[in-house]
Length: 192
Image (cartoon, rainbow, N blue to C red):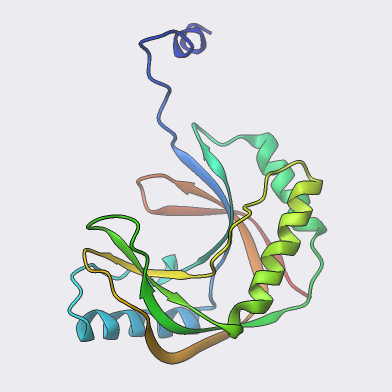
């Protein structure tokens, strides 16, 4: 109780968030390996210095539900309700270019992105957002489908790559332990 009171007093900093709650898509294992090979190839070809992410960390963030101190169980339950309510068939996604986001000086995300091959993914993200709103959650309004490969000081303009595609048949609600590069899958749903 005393800690709660102190947090509201001037001169006390709010606690640092420890957990992030998100809806994600992970590529299947074979596709993740393909993405890892492409990340290494591009790193070498473009003389990038950043280390590629671990293969099991490649993902697409669908919706960010917020950063918290601890895990808010009520939001987890609402997320589970939204995920459970979404009924959709598997769909294909294709990434055909690599490009940097130039929004973090010295630490720019170098990403896979796509053109028409991500339209079904955009539609899926929007449908999940509608279910989130029905469950009392605030969906992300902006969505640029991408997979971060690595972080680097350079800003790389768009590079065409051999298309990487897979059939999305599963999405997950994830707790990310901030600063620990750890994802904990809280719930997963198969598309059918």
